[in-house]
Structures are given as C-alpha cells and as structure tokens.
Image (cartoon, rainbow, N blue to C red; front, side, top):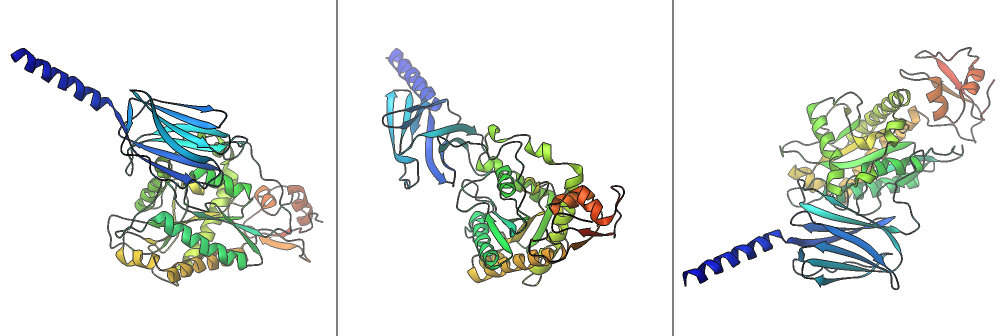
Length: 437
C-alpha cells in the first residue's frame, strides 16, 4: 500500500514537471501596415519554433515545440492582402501547429521579443509581399534632386502605434490614438496650404520602428519633420505642452533625458528585429550637417512652442533637447511635440475633445508657417529674383548649397567669393535659376 502511494506521488511529480515545461500561447494579435502584416503571439515563456511555407495552395506553417493554445484562436479581421484563414493542429503530442492559409505568396520573417514593461515573451511574424524587400530603405539611399517647383514637404509622424500604445491615461486614453488624430488634423491644414504638401509617416494603427520613420521622411524628401506625442509622468499634476529637438551632447534637463529614454524604448515594445538595424545613421550623422540641422530644429521648435503657448500652458519656456532617435535625420529640421500630459486628468479630457485637438494641430501648423517665413527652405521656379540669405552660426557653404539645391561653385560665383570662408551675419545671394554671377 505504501509502495502504491509513493508511485502515485512520483507520477504526479513527473506530470507537474511536464506541465511546467509546456509553453502557453495566451493570445494572438494582428496589425496591418501599408507594406506588411504583423502577427504577435503572447507566450508564457520563450519557445522553440519552426516556420516554413507550403504551395498549392499557399500556406505558412508555424510549429511551436511543447506548446499549447489557451482557449481558441481569436477572430481576426482578414480583409488584408495576405491572410485567408488561420487554423491549428497537432502533428504530434509535443507540437502546436498554427497554419496560415494565404491569399498570395509572402516573404515571412519571425523573431522573438523578451519581456518589457507592457508585455511578456512574444513571438512576432511579419508578412511581406514575396517581391518586396523587408528593409526600410537601401543603406546607401540618397534622395534624388528635388524639382524646384515642388511644394514644401512636411513629414507628420504620429508617435507609437500597433503593439506600442505609448502612454495610457487614467481613463484609458492611448497616446497612439491621440497622436494619430492630431496628425490627421495637421495633415488637413497642410493640404489646404497651397505651398505645402503633407506626408503621413504612420497612416493607421500599426507599429513603425523609429529608423523606418526617418527613412520614410527622407524618401519623400521632407523639408520639415514633426513627431506628435502625448506624454505621461508619475506626478499627475504636471501639465502643459512641450517641444523637443535633438541633442548630440546630452539632455538639457533630467526630464528631457527621461522622456528620450522612454520614447527610444518604443522599439523594444513595438518589436524590432536585429535585422532592422543598419549603419545608415552612422554614415549620415556628419558633424557639419547635424550642427546645422539641430540649429534649424531649435528655431522650428521655438516657433511651434510660441504658437502652442497661445492655446494653453506650456511645460517649459524653451525648446528642450535630448537624444531622441526619431529626430536623428541629418538633413531635415526635426522636432518632437508633446501635446499634453495624458497622466493629468484635465489634459486627458482635453485631448479626447476633437475641437481641442484641432486647436493643437492649428498651433503646430502656425508654428511651421512662421518658421518657413523666416527660413525659406528653397527658391521656386516662379521666383523673379535671386534670394538673399543671412549667414547664421554653424552655417557653411556646403550646407547652404544642399539646402537650396545649388552648388558651392555657383554660390561662390554669385557672391564673388575667393574661398569657402563665410562669417555670421554675412548676406549671400542665392541664385534661384541655378546659376549665379
């Protein structure tokens, strides 16, 4: 009798060990971006997996070792270009199989993510069109020369998205939703402006890595980059909008450093494969161009902050600086606007109000307009006379030539310069027709 009891205890112990070793798939979520569809599996712990494709009909098969599904697969919106149906199976007792019936051939990519402040272990599957590249842009990408009659391009970046909700207010307001709504209001205003053209970096509720945001702005040859956010802070009394520019040395305040660390962690939450990283930024962050771009960004930020001050309190009196990855474009004046604090109950209610969001968008638009009136981006083909530019601290002939689509030689001929030296306050003639002198 005693032997039977011992055997029963041993069997129970072995069974518990086996159960403890099983990985549970707790949930499955899907996000659709313009160029790919992302599936995210929430797991109880890391899992060994194998992904392979089958033809006739096209299928993508995911085998998870020693795994089980908690409940059943959720009902997903399958109106996108890739997925026809999802189903599960058990090829053997220790494998959970998830089959994706496809509408077309895909180029899949999968990677695992470790836990962070919002999620536990995750397995990510990105589906791209078979013929598409999964890279944001070629590493050596250089924007082609712009037509002089083109409108000024404003890149509007709605922060966070998809897997990454950003800050969440006390009553559940999510930053990713607010930032997109403000971005859409700003897009309307810029569309109505005959001299500008908007480019939405994120157009829906999906995740986009910080570097892909920069790459998209550069592909569209943006003249201005504005990233829109709604912050949260442990102290719920903190309120007011604020504007940030890039710092190449260090944060201007401890809060600016804290915020930059928080925003830069978005890639850990949203999910970035190591294959997403490249040395593009290392190649393009040249001292000369970045010094000039940061200076322009501070001017842009100050004009936007001044406009925001007219519609409500601002958290700081000046533009703060920190090492925001999303602002590291070498050739585009870039700012990050914190519209308000979702952690503040009053400001959370205001951000949920469409009329207030329109006021915020209009303030940003007015700030951009003021900046462009003081710093013309480039001459247009319709201009009758050459422009005059006043040299500022950090300027160089090469940076000015790039900005106005001309060459150093033409600038020197137009201004009768013998060398490359210019001085602060000096007035330079910018030849609008591409020739000078």
